[in-house]
Image 1: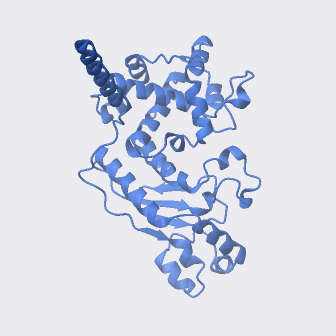
Image 2 (image 1 turned 60 degrees about the horizontal axis):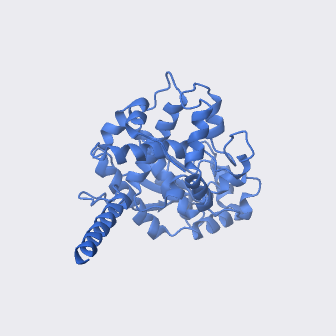
Image 3 (image 1 turned 180 degrees about the horizontal axis):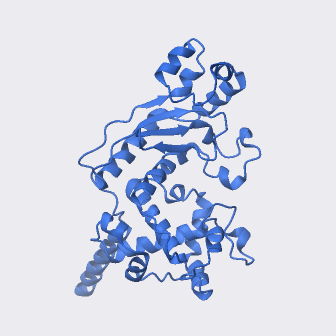
Length: 325
């Protein structure tokens, strides 16, 4: 009896150990060469400070004014509504935490791509004019710009007229994942020749894999620009989604309309069935991500850079991706 008990105990330990291994995040690593601490410059704080002469502001930020005349620029600086929007937007952001999170992000990027140089980071207000693309990077000058009015919070009154599905990712917690996405696109070459749906799935999966590598401590739903509910739906229906793609011969299809249905932003994915309104948007990105995750489960010793160079067919074949209900 004692032997049976001991054997059950050992088996339980082994099962527990295997479960722990499966649940471990392979991208949580020790950073040996961290990036320099990020120092964020808030341009609009000075822009709307009328105690700072316009000429001084222009000399400090000669690229910020663009093609606007001095007269129009002065009017914009004194616009009380613009200033009010900026103050509300910046009040939503914990700049100290953003500093820390961006430093951590850049450290992870640098770990996998040692040639990466930390950009200068600037916050600014577009007065709601640039909220649809609130993060952009200028590689020539190595400058990263974040429009604070793009992250005032879902259902903010200032966002009246903006589609609800866009507002899902217009919260302060979406800033760092969107920055990470911008840089991920620099490291994933895109081949537009002979594109099949599987090529697009794997391309998107590679981008999401970099999100995993760059942001190992961030929730998955934020990486997808999802709500938690949308992410939960995708997880619960992963097998059904894949079965739909397979049964309708979509995986190796060259139908360009599939991008509109399953990749591009929208309120939901377009299966053209009764589940559409319940479905999570951009489900093709989610599927490509899960294929790539399965690839690394099957091939854990593969280096990230080697993985990025592999073609879609290789990754798909070696992933043995067959999700089950």
